[in-house]
Length: 145
Image (tube, rainbow, N blue to C red; front, top):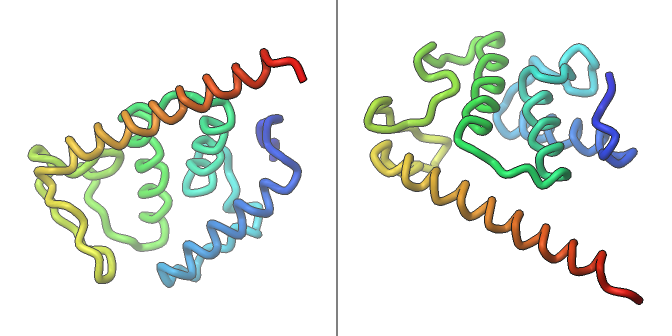
């Protein structure tokens, strides 16, 4: 498996540790990301994490499409292990056209009516941060020391 060249040498180990810890929190025991069979670029949790990290390193602005694509990768993998999600929910956010409220443990996320606006604000905030970081990096690169 080849990770993007921009990744540091210990990135794979950190990603595997993060994904396995996430599985432990969710009581998922069927998947061990230390096993290469579960580390596929472009698929599942591993693929979504690789792509999101590549976007972060390259400062690629996020879009609704990117995040919904990653959500689809995650849920398609969960379906393989018996987690229930309706096909019309894969790769989509909760909204007035997908009227579903959820609960994650004791946490109750916002009502589906609020998700599209909150989602848009989150993406805008992340992208503004990326612009600020890009500007800061450019200023550092042009200064002489």
